[in-house]
Image (cartoon, helix red, strand yellow):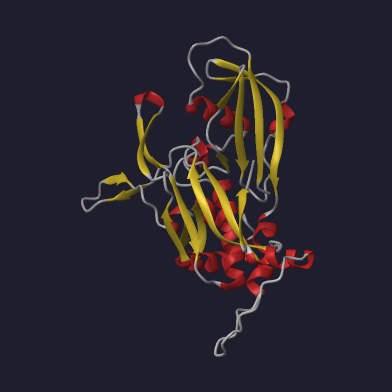
Length: 315
């Protein structure tokens, strides 16, 4: 089942060079190796950014295992107290906290509770790598993604789903096939109802990242707001699951190498508030003297405040 860990590591080596993204990728390739035949295929894990220094030789790292059927070959918690080499550094895991542990069946079918997720703010934590082809066939960076591109892609062959990438790709590759096919049809149709807009002060912009072997990787950084228009109860349930998958699986290419890590903050609406009837039209209303607030009115006041900030989905 999909699992996410937050790992705290302590550096035991004195070295001037910082930990590099390729060092992190090399470590995870030892923890969670892929067969040679799958080396070029999409990884079963997402590296949600790279090691982030906390000060006093401490580092923070977040990792996700995406496979629903096959467990991760190694639980990071098993390595607590055992030093690991990361490039020029020797890092000792001090703790590995599991911050997500749920099957795709639960994620896609379980009731979401009393709140309806109708909007979300998505902010990048690392560059997001997306490319598109211009008129000459040249690949160029793509930095203003449609919601469909933001949530990934599903690959088909002969009408059958054979794989994918990103949030919807994780479902296509790892969720139970009988559930995945019908859910993906609904989700991909529902994405047509998702609208994007800018976040003030978080405008999407081109970003350069200096990677291994003096390579420069072009991507984008910034934030945007997503909102689902209509769709009914089932549509908002699907939207909430898509947002959860978006943060788990990451965005764009090279998520296994730490790119495309995003933070998703949701805005929820009370189901009860949605059921409060609107005033009937056609009859003039009488002006009445307002009564002082009573304790019994507190529930109605809470209903009137329909939207609230949901906070980050993880960590």
